Length: 148
Image 1 (spheres, rainbow, N blue to C red):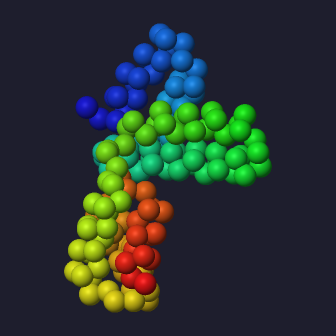
Image 2 (cartoon, rainbow, N blue to C red):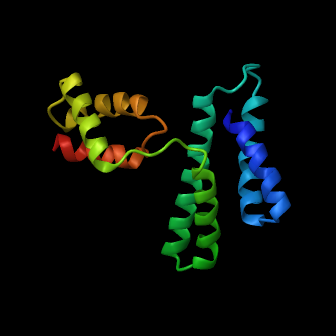
């Protein structure tokens, strides 16, 4: 079942249970899908595209929550965190740190990278290979750690 159809099913359940936080985040996701579908390309979204949209919305929610927490506004940060958790259920299972290190280590040896100058090449390969399976910040942090 595609992510879009899962979102519709979850929206129906959220409406029935009157879960406003879930409904708000699912509506935002549906809106993002509609925007992408009507972008003029005429091509229906692939599963990869749907996952990228979900990742983008989760990142926005987490970034907003971090900003609110820095400003000691937990009343605004808590709903953002709750929405991010609801949206994360549509993402594939995230890789653990040890698993990421082994995959990125293989990518580094495959690319022949030896220093921080090669970070761009490694990040490009890692981002493609680990799309949807790991957060970009986590990938970047491990690449820096392994190359330095």
